[in-house]
Amino acid sequence: MEDGTNRKAATAASFGASADEYLSSTTHREGDDLERLASWCDEASWALDVATGAGHTAGALVDAGVPNVVAADASRSMVATSVDSFPGVVGVVADAERLPFPPETFDAVTCRIAAHHFSAPETFVDEVSRVLRPGGVFAFEDNVVPDDDTLGSFLNHVEEARDPTHVESYSTSTWLRWMENAGVAVEGTEHLVKRIDVQAWLDRIGSLDTEQKVRVRRTFAEAPGTVLDAFDIRFENGAVESFGSPKALIRARKPPE
Image 1: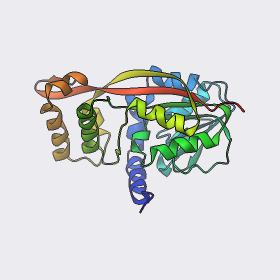
Image 2: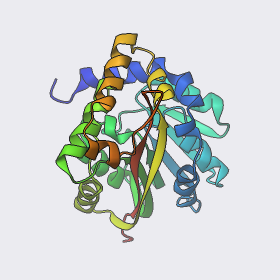
Image 3: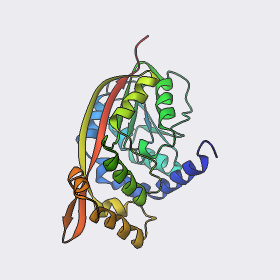
Image 4: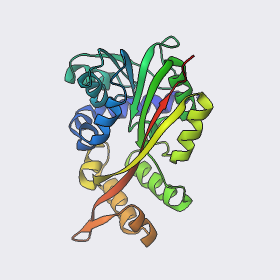
């Protein structure tokens, strides 16, 4: 269908089946980036966490002192996991590109390490702008790719080979342009690289069989030197052990009236 309904349903089902793995994932439950996103929203009264996954960011918002936190996800299982795991969080099953809230509902909206699964990321940014109150904060983080087409293509290829729900990781400049077009003003951008343990990264996708895991590992092993260097791909006893995943943190604000 034109709106990607079938793909979205498959993505929600895939994540729902891996809810426990995402809850325990070090990449998602730990890191200065998680605390930083939450701190950007600590003055909010109402906050929305879009594509909450297992709820780590929603829980961090509660810990930061936000009194009303809504965790939204297309997966009913993920919403249930977030509510069960983080007291004080209210859950809503929702499409990131069709948020079921009136305009100007929230003082803050967060989205962390999820948007590369969205079919229409520009629409998502428009929706964030719509539900934000004037002066509200948009605290965003996602995987990003370098401006170099070869490097970007490699990272997107290996991500999709590992997880077919991956749509695309974009450059930071692309996200900044979409935010500007949606009427939210970027206040700051930070970059970081998270070291990803390949075995844990592969195991988190429960539907991957052994042959698929071997194929992903082979893609890393056969990468050219420029790719190995760019993503600091490391090997142990001849097998890929880890790589550096580049991410951008963007703080934006809907202009006050």
